[in-house]
Length: 218
Image (tube, rainbow, N blue to C red):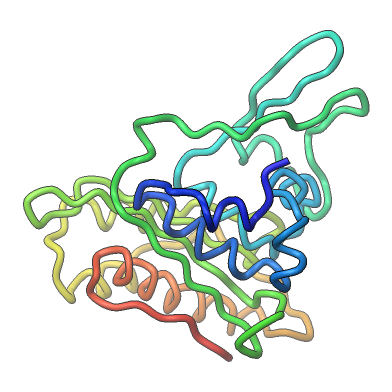
């Protein structure tokens, strides 16, 4: 029953900064006070702000029924637009993050048609582990550009081993993003979303490394 306001107020490691930022984007403050993180996942909207931020910390859901308990990674739980692997006799009882993923720093960037109370055109979360000025590990996820939010393995691979300089932006811009399959709708064309996804990933990466930060409007 954890609400988005609970997430914002709770003291969490920097790896969860992206989740805190996403929490502030879920509707209005009134909605954040009552809407649960689990409910956001079960709703399974492609534009759910919380999903990319949870993906970059390798979150999994705990599903319980009267007979058994099982665990699924988010990629195995959210199956498509408004579709999940939740069975009729199950409920989500926890969201689990492995300790190995609760490290590093993270950031979240959302692109919308206006500043507040808007459905995302695209959003990105980035979590980076920096060691001796070099990206030791990277987790990147993009939402609202596919039927479900996706981790970008090609971008992650391109970032690993890179020194933390402005050249990180070039690594993102030249990396493959084959995981995305943007749709066209009233908020933006597929081509616009694909270009926007690269730009907001750059901004999320830079924010996670303190090279820059920012939320953008279309």
